[in-house]
Length: 286
Image (tube, rainbow, N blue to C red; front, side):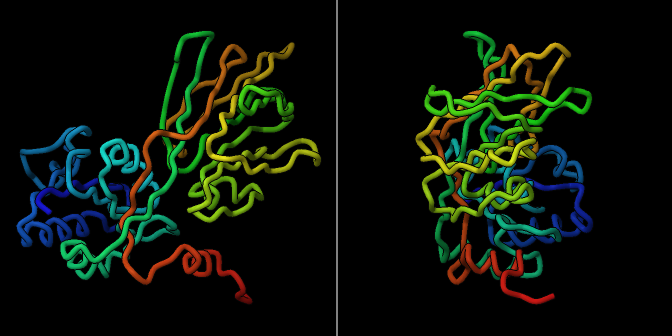
């Protein structure tokens, strides 16, 4: 292992010292650390990498929390680069290592004592007629929500170009199994194990009790359109809560399985079900 990329959530408390500690550990092992400009500036170093360069490493380390891992996935997945998440505080389903255990984790990483947890990603495309307006890949979800000043929207939902239903709801979400423990969970959605080859179609705060979450095969294509109304109506689509674009009744949002997967470094002994018990405190009495 010669080159390691470093992506950092700079807003986290204590992150400055964590960066210095991590870079020192990596460089003492003879590893070249590839870092973006904001991290290089923090360390007072003249050399920095572009986003494209961060995707051309042996491992991409995401230092922060799950949001940082989500950002890393968009960079790493197209290049088949593994991601190691190191958590600084927070809740965290994706980040594998607590900061205090980073030295031990790096030793296992260099010894190749790990396995890769492959996670399905989705692709969201926004179309106006035959013109592609916007596109983004995500590890968690693609979520449409109405704008604060819009009336109650109605979303038309199609699966594989077949009309499914009209959703009078604040929004509609399509989540991967990874994303089923994120935004849709707070809206009452089910948890999907990460190795389930499926998507979750979820009404977000529907204004009717008849609309329920629907589990779809991952090969399904979901199309969402915002119906026009007498009053101006608009919404927004957000991918992983990080990339967004305005949605108008003239748009067509198409969501499908991305051609690449995120590969997350896991160490032996950790499991998804253990995380459920720890993070959601299943079976515990308060």
